[in-house]
Length: 480
Image (cartoon, rainbow, N blue to C red; front, side, top):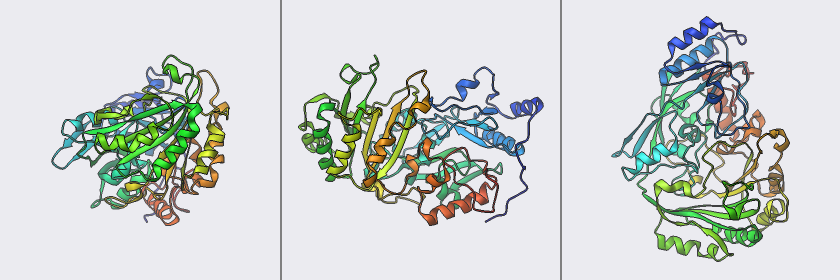
């Protein structure tokens, strides 16, 4: 472990001249509160989170990231990073330097090696579209507009191929990043291997990622989509799903979802203002085998809408149909050791047709398969023995106070407590999980201790703390 260098004792003010110098140093925009474009630049996908940094650097390239981190270091400021904001942690405070990476959209594919290099602002739709030209596909999440880097640093759960190939973080080849000392580093198995290990699952604690390379897979089509049922049939559907998941092959990703969507024109008529149950699928085998696999679920209750079909991989987002535009929502996450018939009954008590729940979405997503094993170089994505992940989302209506909805969905987690893992997972840490105690639960004790040692060596002042923070080990830095 290295000792801490001389560090600023606290935030130092910067002058208009300092900002002018920064503006000259970077190619992208530099924005202050009140500037045109500031509010838009600071806004992420989840509108519940409000960012008010002292200055925003809209990075155009890695050199801009270097300049922004060095600027923050000179003035003792914490650094926040924003790409799309799909996975928010909390409000960015008024003393922070925010780096937005959405302009960094470079991408190149090596079809022979089945790899893709992406810059920090690339979103999944760009990767999926360009990889498909070569007959390849990535371990993409549920939505096309999610940022690749943030998703991958948290582990990266693919709704298309996760159980077949594992976590996205397992297939990263190298990562370029700017560390707290203002240096651009290349982390891989052979270079900066401590950072390479820690970054994959350690999220944004160790620097600002500027680019990464990861593997693609020779997949061109999926038998995928969703079955939708009336909420009145939720009991039959969810119990059928529990039996189905118990014997599901690794080539199948699936989830069962309870939906209480608002009565709005953008919502299909049969779902507006009422409970709907859905089962989502992605199968890598043949259409005939897929039809045979899901036949028991099609027979569980009358199907209101069936979108399951053989489709090109580029239509992956037809599985979850996530909203394409920003929303305001309160989110809760957990992982379960098992799902039994009693688990389903408990879930229906708090979110089923008789519950009167305020939660809008409850998603029970199967894990296991290759997600339980390590592929490639070791990393810190843990809790691999979990059987399912469960998500609960409550939408905050326009004009209403998010605090009034802060606990919506927590009742789901409380009722499922007998089946919940005592551990968290880095891919499923929400805004309520920003405390050191909760973040610690995502790692076993030796891993967490080693992460703190790396943090102390690489970021002793905890510059990168506006996240699910891993503070430096005791006695190595202030890290307030």
